Length: 76
Picture 1 (tube, one colour):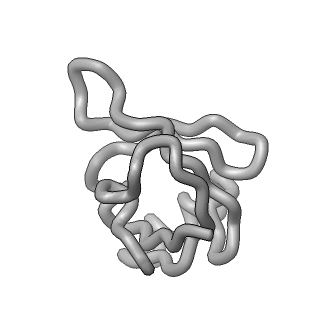
Picture 2: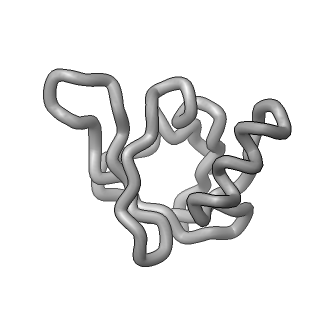
């Protein structure tokens, strides 16, 4: 089952199924290591903000809510 990253359960692991958005935002995702098929874990939202904390591969990243809505994730 595929989820928007915002709706992906906290502490769940999966992989990136699809990237949406303009070419510039997709390029930004690639530079951060977020690619189709990349392993991702949702660590939840940061306190007092709507930002989402994730681990992609070995990297810990914080994405804005608008960016997280552009990522489609499937669970293992």
